[in-house]
Image 1 (cartoon, helix red, strand yellow):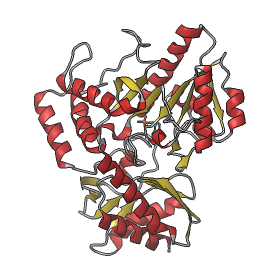
Image 2 (image 1 turned 90 degrees about the horizontal axis):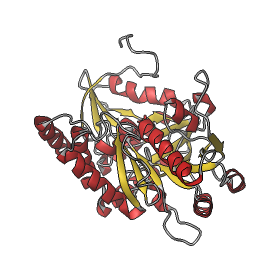
Image 3 (image 1 turned 135 degrees about the vertical axis):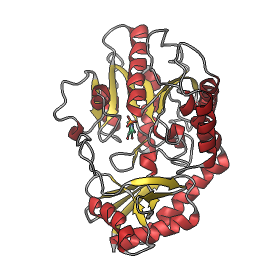
Image 4 (image 1 turned 180 degrees about the horizontal axis):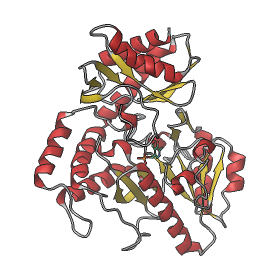
Length: 399
Ligand code: PLP
């Protein structure tokens, strides 16, 4: 491993050179079952032929067109994305490159909506403890985990973190004189796959509606089909049993299947808030990313494909539930966490070492969410037999 990188990652001792489907291959051609999807990015696995073709074709045409002009591929992508999100009330989109950038823009959008309608002083954004919204100074302010805050202040003002599930705190904190938005992950990813309760989301929807506070969802990890529906928040209902209405939704990670892309989707209230010059991004809507994004949307935004994600997730969880060394298995679709007694990093290391011990024995790639939680985010194209292999290897590593 070289030492010119800044020391920001706990990197494991393996170098990957290529991928195929749900597998990655290292420099010695050893195979690893990838249950990470590059942290929810390679939704369609590695080297997915339609993605490779779309990206190659676009690269032959043009790599980049600046946002002063239009580009046919970027426009087609934006249209398909808004169309795919229209059932959840989304009307317009701003294209970005990453999750933090999308979330940062979402906060700007919420603040401007509130400022224009109610004047200064109503700019607070309420988020949840345990949330993760990104690494910029503002998205760190939004992130409700102290461990990410040390050393980097002063932070952007105007963020309050409350406990998910605490409806009293919600009622007290969502002050219509000071709060612009409530920004949440329906299922928290980074902190170990923590779904919000139906009661909490329904109460939040009701309070936001009554007080004209924007209901904003960070679907960067749990969206795009990961939990078996296009958005994870679609699995919740409001107090009247109707679908939840979002005002702003952010996406990134798998939006272009492995090429950087992010998006801010705006509903009825916020669709026309940004005016020319209010926001921008050099690479946002990049044609190569857009070409890849079109393939992702075409593949994922399909009820049969989404139902398969749920089925595969159930199969994976069912296969791990009867392991006495796993204290808890939770998740939705292919977003799964395992509570284990052993140190999760040791298990991740063992998953890699496994490939080097015996010839033709495969390794496995998983993620840690804290000391005793393994997080699994397999690619949607994983097959039943690969799920079975995954279950077998995990059970073996935990034995
Ligand atoms: N929001 C959520 C829910 C995430 O899981 C992440 C990344 O893990 C982010 C935002 C930040 O995304 P990015 O790393 O692309 O800035």
